[in-house]
Structures are given as structure tokens and as C-alpha cells.
Amino acid sequence: GEDVEQSLFLSVREGDSSVINCTYTDSSSTYLYWYKQEPGAGLQLLTYIFSNMDMKQDQRLTVLLNKKDKHLSLRIADTQTGDSAIYFCADDGGYNKLIFGAGTRLAVHP
Amino acid sequence: EADIYQTPRYLVIGTGKKITLECSQTMGHDKMYWYQQDPGMELHLIHYSYGVNSTEKGDLSSESTVSRIRTEHFPLTLESARPSHTSQYLCASRPDRGGNTIYFGEGSWLTVV
Image 1: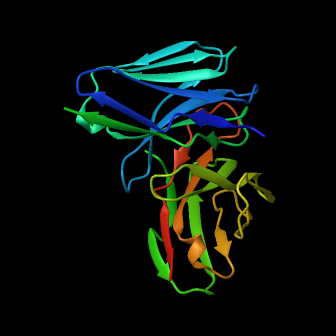
Image 2: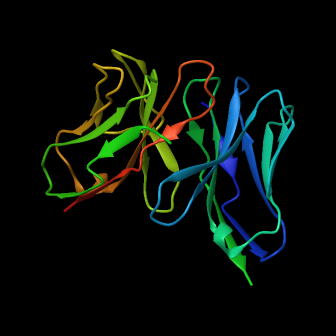
């Protein structure tokens, strides 16, 4: 079946860039998403990318998509302590099921 | 602003009780989903629906059941709750075609004692 994989932990210094990586297996994906979840809170949609794009930029966020390798990344520029959270990559499987990765726990330290 | 609502937000019930978690959306979305998430852990798809009278089991085996009698309503039921069902349950919806935004409810935190 479809699968989405992410590294579980990332630690960065405040002010540096963070890069969170994700790989997926479904070749029929239409949209790929990045969600942020803070402790005890719900899911917040950060950004998404259509599968025929290879890059999308939204303020401090840059999404890169390599469709051939089925690799997605999220870059957060000038990472702040408020960015500490769990980041989930999700694949829509071509408008069908929404499959999430296990989440990457981003820790930002001074 | 997402118009998708879950009730109850928080619930503590005893083992063996029957519980229904409600999810409603007013956006006319055909596709709806239920996810189970333990705190700080990954989301597991347990049920989804493509529209009225359509329900499918997700990737994670679940003892819960769902129904989709109306477009706007996608309730999840546990016939006999157990402590292993303690978790957060998240409902989501999206349009059938042409919509790239997935809307999530705020979640229902269930504790079974």
C-alpha cells in the first residue's frame, strides 16, 4: 500500500534554516502537504504543492518536490523557537486516501 | 475558516460503554476521513468515505464503525470502549474534485478508564 516516510527528529539552532525531508511511494499523488502540530493542538496546514510543480515558496517556507524520486522537502528559513513542533508530510494518493508520515519533531535551541 | 466540527472535544468514559464521536461539515464536501492519533505520534487513517452510503476501512485496523447517511455528517462509533481506545480522533474533509485544501476538525480526545 501507499507509504510516507520521514525522519523522526531534527534539532537546529535559532536563526538557522531547517530542512525536513519526506519520501512517498504513491505515483498517483496529486497534492502533497505539510502540516504543523504543536503539543496538545490540532493540525495546522502550512503549505501544499501540486504534483506538477517542483518548487513553491511561501514567506519563510520553501517546498521542493522531486517527483521522479518521490521526495518532498520543507525548508524553514530563519527558524525561530515558535517553529518547534511536529511536522507531518501527507500524500493525497490522487484525491483518495490521505496518508501521513510519522512526523518530524523539530527542536529549535538558542 | 474551516467549517468542520467535532463533538465531544474531551470525553472520559468507562470500559464497555458505547460512544459515538460526531463530525459535521457544512462545506458540502464529499470526502471525509477519520484518523486516530496518540499524543505526539503519527496519524493513522481508520475510516474514510467518498460520499453518502460510501464507507471504507483505512490502513489501521479499528474496532470502530462509521456511517455516512448524510453528506455533512460522518459519525464514528465504538460499541464497547476499552482502555486501548484511549487516543485523539481527528476528522477531516475535502471536496471531491478541484479542491486542494483538506480541512481538519479540532479533534476529540477520548479517555477510557
